[in-house]
Structure formats: structure tokens, C-alpha cells
Length: 145
Image (cartoon, rainbow, N blue to C red; front, side):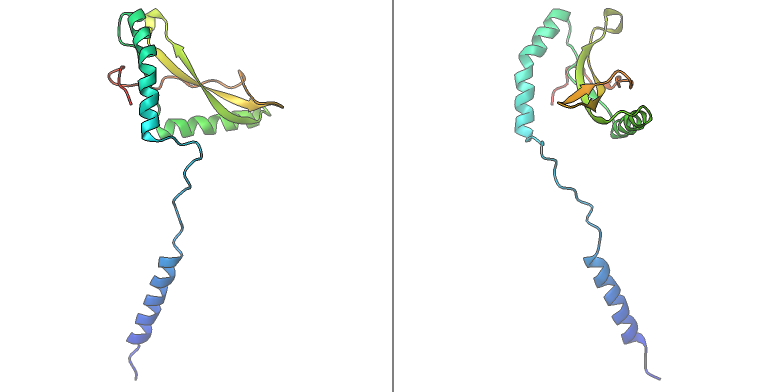
């Protein structure tokens, strides 16, 4: 009786070869609107005069960023898509707005997100779906990029 070991080795090698060349590609193409780290640094530096003026007016360092987890953003995107569908709205994006809390809430700047719906000419904010706020402040609030 001949050994079946060479046949078994050939089968295993073939399966490994097939697996190695047919693995799913989990890499995504880079988004078209990415900027370089230097461009982000430049935007931060350009913002410094505005930030300093706001902080001077407030008499304390203002907030300069808002942080949302990926899970929070994904949850909000799913929420606005669902709400849009249930209200027959063509939700096509999110607009990021700068805002500021009142004196009772520390007067810090904030950023909130508003869903937009497609119109004939562009994307319009909708007040039929709730905006998102309460991202985490940079710690300290004056944290820069």
C-alpha cells in the first residue's frame, strides 16, 4: 500500500496557495479630500490669531476642538439615515457648525453636527432630524493639533 502522505502534502500546499492569493483585500482607497499633516499644522497655526482673540475676550483659554469616537459618529450616521428614510428625506451629508455655550456652561466654543438633505441646487440643513453635540473637549481645552 502506497503512502498517502505526498498526496496529503500536495492538497494542503494547494489549499494554502489558493488562500494566500485569494485573501480579501481589506485596504480602502484613500479619500479624495485628505490633507497632509503639514496642511493640518498650517490650518492650526492660521487659527491661532482667532483663538487668541476669542480667549482674550473670554478672559480664559477657549476650547479649540471637539472629539467624537468612531462609534458615536457611526451611530449618528446610522440614526440620520434611518430618520431621513422614515421622514422621506434624502439625507446626503452632515454640516459641522461652530457654536458657543452660554455663561452658565463655561462659555466654551463647541462644534455640533447638523444633517443635510439634497435639494435641487445643493445640500440644505434640516431641522426635521436632531443635531449632534457634546463631543469631548480637547484636554486641556487649548490642545492643538
